Length: 318
Image 1 (cartoon, rainbow, N blue to C red):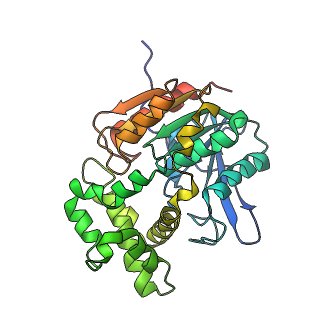
Image 2 (tube, rainbow, N blue to C red; image 1 turned 90 degrees about the vertical axis):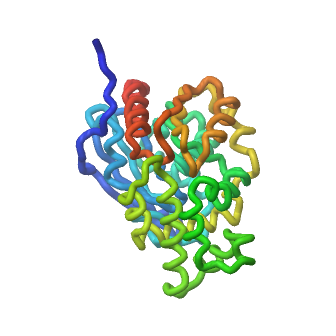
């Protein structure tokens, strides 16, 4: 009887790393690991602003996949860190395509979760002929109601974490949390922007798992990650993600004929399942996997297993 792998692959190192100069300001870190002649897959990290990590290589069979991982503008190892100039969804979509061209890849599988699902769909709709398939997790479509949920709705389930988020805000500022945080995060004074970044990022980390995970909260509270994540997320949020309301759903026909799997934790509080449902209703051809015992994080056991199963099924596509 054949069994499908569900565990992450062993840690590996890249066989190539580099920097792609995007313009006079930004340069983007990228790396390749696995099989240089394998099936290309691009990993699109979340946030925006979270950056990629070595564990992300491990969702893919290194003997079969050519694994491309990169950090978006201002995130992770890309420079300058936290830079907001010329940092929009449209820039990020073009950056993915520029990376594909730079690496000489004809078509690739697009793998992204949370904000990575947003950007993956946006990229696919812009360049459908370059996509072999999609593996998408924790769906986020950049809708106004999703932002409102993140800033106010999660208080329903995580009241103590929300109270920590707003602890330093005035009563008036609590009526517009995004503006209050944006003002702090855009400050040049570390005494102002760092506490705000830590609080914002810790809030997101605490709400990302079904079972409380101090390790996740600790990782999100790292100053370098917190600064880029909070600053870039606030920048995108105040600009409605630089996406016309409902545009990703409106244009889904451009990719409906491309194989896809949507993976969603039933108890995802950061990107609630209602959005994944909307996406699947618009894209019924996509396989829809609801993980019954998981929240938002890709590292939760059920989500992790579903992602590995999906990558196993996709690894013979060209």
